Length: 110
Length: 116
Image (cartoon, rainbow over all chains, first blue to last red; front, side, top):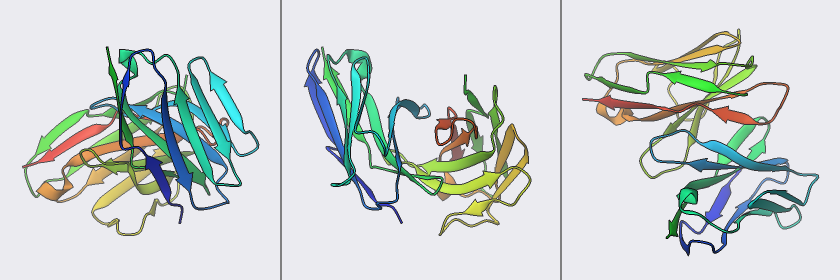
């Protein structure tokens, strides 16, 4: 099955700086890569996603890049704000199933 | 759009009892729903995939007789934890696919189960 690795496990950034989270996947058949933000005690919220036929996608301060050859994808958050503090999960979709990374706890210092 | 609700948000029960958790898609018809379990500070682990009108497909290691799933309509799936034990205490989260916007999965707010 699919194996998704996510790094780093924790990330502390100064408000206004950028945050980058990287993920790799193992199954070349995976073709959809969503990113979720989860706040304490809540369900995951889809923040951005990318499909295998696209290399990069941007939505305001958030961007995702995908390298299918290397089987890795990354989340970029620019101009971080305190409300960006949360746990972020990457995932890879294969055969209608999501496999999640272990998560990254992002802390934005004011 | 694409709102998924869960009920209850929290439940505490005694060991040996059964607990039912509901997952509803509020503004779309969900062709497929998923049930996940999440332990503290860990990732989401898929338990089962539920399609309306058919039997759920369970992931390896998940006991189908312990975690009963019913997907009776295109907007409702239920998870029943039977004969719950303290080790079943966890955060249970459902998600749904609309079919129109596949493959996006929309997640519910989760249900915190505590078994005493």
